[in-house]
Amino acid sequence: MTFELGQGTGPLRGVKVVEIAGIGPSPHACMMLADLGADVIRVERPGGQMLTGGSHDLLNRGRPSVALNLKDPAAVETVLTLIEDADVLVEGMRPGVTEKLGIGPDACAERNPRLVYARMTGWGQTGPFAQVAGHDMNYIAITGTLHGLGQVKGKPQFPGNLVGDFGGGSTYLVIGILAALLEAKSSGQGQVVDAAIVDGTASLNAMGAAFLAGGGFKEERASNLLDGGTPYYDVYETSDGEHMSVGALEPQFYEVFVELLGIKDTAPDRYDPANHDQLRKLIAATFLQRTQAEWVGIFEGSDACVAGIIPMSKAIEHPHMKARQVFVEHEGVVQPQPAPRFSRTEATLSHPPAPVPGAHTREALAAWGIDNVEQLLESGAAVQP
Image (cartoon, rainbow, N blue to C red; front, side):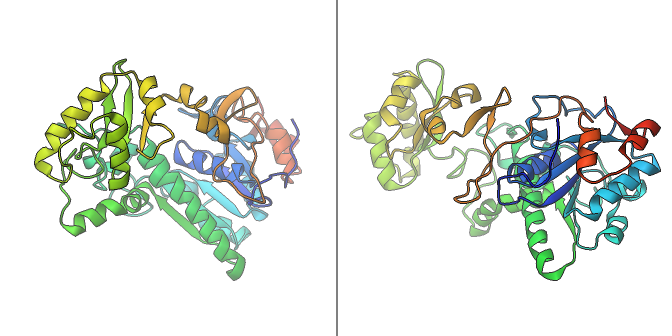
């Protein structure tokens, strides 16, 4: 495989990113940057690390993988050479680790004052937990977000690692990178982006903070407008054991909902909270009378705000998803297209994930202007399996 820079098709074409490989949010952020056209080179430790890697690891798509032993001064010098002509460095290690390796913000700024140095952590670069290990659910736990998730009164329900790692993490990391890049174009100076999952998740939950400030928000699950506390914003089982999502909040949409469900003449007044238990039981009993497919045929495409809940394997074939080509087969793997979409600089998928860490060491380093690749390989500072 050969690599040539500047071949991206999205709006970030020409932006150069050096990624110090991590797990979770930082590779997801670099996937998005690569999806949008940036040239990203992924620097991995020889042999890789847990929870990442392989030809089906879509978080690593769109960029080559090089393996460098960052305990070797020659490998450290290689990273510093890479960032001399880069726009962004992304790292997801504990605070202080890159400084110890010799590739911290100060060392990189000496080589490239306009570099955006983007740091992704759970707790942030400062604070009493900064050096403590953690994972998604721990981070969202202390923001007040996890407490209210789920419709089970007894305990919170965590939605995989979507809210913390990718909602409050990689999404805000990318926002920070793009904002810093925009500022650097006018100032000529880079800066450090401290992207912390706790910060991003708190920001993501601004609506919850607004509800709390308004005084009408109950800090208990299944008790509010959008958490299953109302019968017209909830999930209901069908006769075949599948489920439907109901989001008929606005009056005009609710009217369509009760009419298509067939309970328009029997449903009690939804505005009286005293009727909610009765209304919920009526809705639940009615949904149990038909299969999901039958209800989908009745509701989807209407303004009732009702949709069948389907697994990812079926989402690929959903008519709307298929019409927009949200999922495509690329290099033998079905995967989501780049998002969002652009009218003029359309983003398209490029390289598949590396089959093994360092699979592209020789070719990628050469493409990025490293002229002593063979020497690095011979010394063990760089590795190509």
